Image (cartoon, rainbow over all chains, first blue to last red; front, side, top):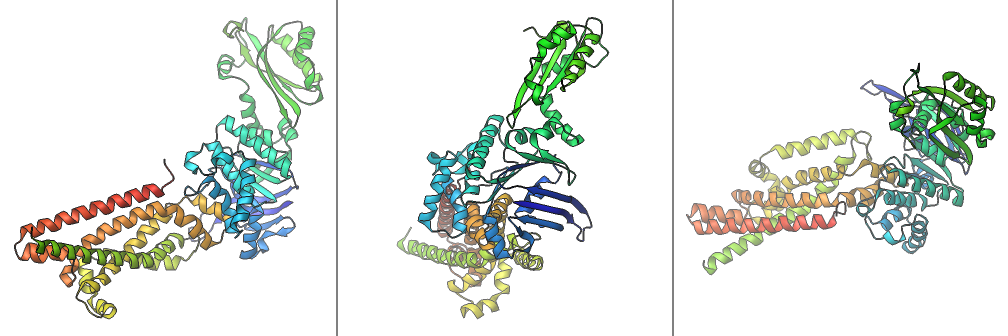
Amino acid sequence: MIRLEGLEKIYGGGRGGVTHHALKGIDLSIEKGEIFGIIGRSGAGKSTLIRTINRLEDVTSGRVVVDGVDIATLTNADLTIFRRSVGMVFQHFNLLSSRTVYGNVALPLELAKVPKDEIAKRVQPMLELVGLTDKSDRYPSELSGGQKQRVGIARALVAEPKVLLCDEVTSALDPETTQQILDLLRDINRRLSLTMVVITHEMSVVRDLCDRVAVIDDGRIVEAGNVFDVFVQPRHETTQALIAGEIEAALPKSLRRIIHDGPGGPGENPVVKIVFTGPNAYDPIISQLSRIAGIDFNILAGQVDYIQNRPFGILFVEAKGGIDEAEKAIAFVQSRNLKAEVIGYVDPDSVPAG
Amino acid sequence: MSIQILSLLANAAVETGYMVLVAIAIGTALGGPLGVLLATSGRGELFEMTVFNRVVGGIVNATRSIPFIILAVAIIPFTRMVAGTSIGTSAAIVPLTVAATPFIARIIEGAVRGVDAGLIEAAQAMGAKPLQIVFKVLLPEALPAIVLGLTLTTVLLIGYSAMVGAVGGGGLGDLGIRYGYQRFRPDIMAAVVIVLIVVVQLIQTAGDRLARRLNKRVR
């Protein structure tokens, strides 16, 4: 559906002489109907990249092929028509404050000179789709962030595009609203079998929404693949760092404070991090551990997620024994093709009871 | 106050209103498009014309840096060419318009530049053509600021209209100078000042209200 071949983008280079090499040879292929995530830190080039797909940014060299058409060859008139087939949703919504919800959603059709009665027929189902039928006559300033983004999504879909570009669409929203918007996008993807390109700096957005993901760092794609594989087996350090943030989140701050690096003092217990993935993730691992190592394990924190319906979990356990027993347990976990390591030591008296 | 003075005041007020309104109308017709172009012709903007932008910007600045009374006198030949005469209320509209046009251009430029660039990008992503962006996005979004700016211009022109008395224009300012000052009639001077204060208050209040009604940003 979308093919990016050897994209280069260099900004500047005019009289100022300061140039910025934003994209350095990007090759990507995005299939019809999939949700493709592009993740990277700010300044990595992801916003530039997504804007090349509807030619809001011209590339310095390379080709952008959408639905078989090299979009660099489009004349201005054809570009206008092409852009109607590519919807875009923005981080800061970019709604017209002078228009009602209805007026905002109707705008793309007005621009395409669709007759008024036809516009009404097409806007209503869009408002229904995003659950804003009752807000039709409200102005954006009267809406919450999540509602504004719903308007943005309805506006992007009203012209029945083939591709939806999402530029950090949840970055300005709180976690709960983020989840609602991600669910809505997933639902839309299934119902309309729409190809989506999602730019984000949040690994959780990729985890909950995307089918495949590419990691961009300093203008280059450093890693790409199925979301589950990238999550479970991150190869590039940028990917690892992005995922580490997610994993850190599983260990509450109050616990992180009492866990310290080795060596453990007298009476202190090792803390083991166990990462579950793959077919053995469902095993009753803790009770097996107790039997094999001959000690008890106290679960400090953990979370089990499902990425693309496959379990992916992290558990932090306190080994109620010495480092030798802990090592024995780790060896066992590793024999089951799961990952485990000692991340520090904790004084059992400082662990909150319960 | 005698009927005579009241009729003098009424006449002068009508003349002022006529001069200011016509100057605002023509000034907006000329300065409006100019302002939109100034706001959209810079580097990387919708209608990129950097030379035009710099030249017109320079002319606008030059016009605005001339004190109005000097401008009014300096362009008397031009006024005579346009209006057929350089004396009278209608002729006074010419220098008022010449002063209003660049002022309004800057006002509109500022209002249009105040529109979030994200909206232009969103419109482009929807397949909007440049003129559609101007009429469907920039002007509607800038309207509250434009109304406030035109209110400001109106008040400014009422002040300028007092000076065109010096080149033969009529109106409230002329009445104040000729009767109030030169004929030592403080009662007329006071009446003129009071009328001006009331008129300016009314215009400002009406402009503020209209702008607030149009502004859907904060509720």
